[in-house]
Length: 355
Image (cartoon, rainbow, N blue to C red):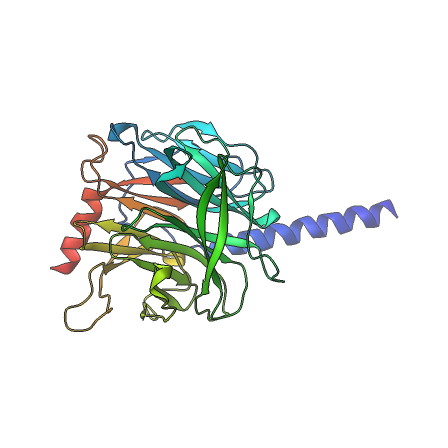
């Protein structure tokens, strides 16, 4: 009897090795001409997923990267521009994606914030920056009353006209037409709360919607409907317009279109970068609309990077320090890390392919 149990365990172990090896073999190799990161962050204990960049208000060389470590015993991690972990949040139950916003009104002052989805509690969590302390009294419930909750993607929109901050939240599954919910943040007695103000967003039903990005200046929401394309909506709920205004990239990806990063060259120009996850590249589109066709975003380049299976990404054009004089692209990679890319190298590759 003992021998049979031992043989069964050996068979199970061998089967697991075969499966894991098979999965590993399916990962695309890093291209020979792939751009190398300026540096790679220290590892988290579990599984990195999504980064966000926080710009220091007076000293950009002290700016930080906030990253999620996605596990039941996960958390948010703060990294400096050298990739060193400088702080970890309180434990969180599977934080998925994260975004930052500036100058949330709290009492008689304003504070910068990081907001993340906490999948296993069906909440979003709000933290002050740069000290990474919770200011939400244990979290804010999302998708209340729904059978399909499991929050995943998140992005923050700051309305230029009045500085009000809104949270757009996606989930593992949900109905097309109301897949995304938009909440307005408010502070009551020093505790951040949220009220639902909008439900919108088409969904193909193929996988999930995890990557969401906001263009504050132009007032747009972009999100990756995986294995389908990138969808675009107006960000301001006061416009009362839930119509999809663009749908692009349908034929540009090997499999999953994932993380979205917006690089702003001016107030209205720049690039939209989308992770081509199974190819280890980023597809680059024009941020500005094509002059001949409204809301037409043109693919102008495909950038090979050293990231493996990149989920989330973020970008900034702010001069950070000598290593990142034109800003950076930060991207999640397998191996529990984030990669920091000097934007100059990204721009050089874009220019080469455009010409």
